[in-house]
Length: 220
Image (cartoon, rainbow, N blue to C red):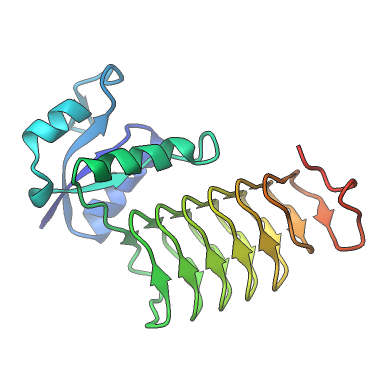
């Protein structure tokens, strides 16, 4: 069995530990947090350590590290943590659930976490440090940038592009050929029918189409 440390102690980290142990044959050696944030010494019967102890107890050559941090601050906290762990020399592999169909034409970057029942069609490119929760559809020839978080049951149609650091909520839907800029928030249930510029925020349960002017689109 492979050995791993999970960075984080929240719900994502706890769920990740189950997937890694039961679906990917990892032994979880520890949960890890930044210095001063380890309020408990163990979690789920597994030790909790800080990053100083990580570098002392586990050589980068001996352990894989998974960053299980959510989309806080538009994924900035997860991005910065991944960068620090890389600077320390640790390998951050991607986890892809065994139910996900893999194609030779797909490209999936490092430090990704892709849950069960995602449909990722041929010619899809997914960048580094992305999280795809359960049950999404990623259409053919689509590109997902770095540090993106996609919640459950989003539909990304063919030939779409999602920029770096963006977030898509539960049941968000993108028509084919849509380009979402970087640092965007697409709310739960939103239907996007027109390109979204960088930094856009679209409320959930609304439709945003080409017929609406940019001033009518809710950019916050």
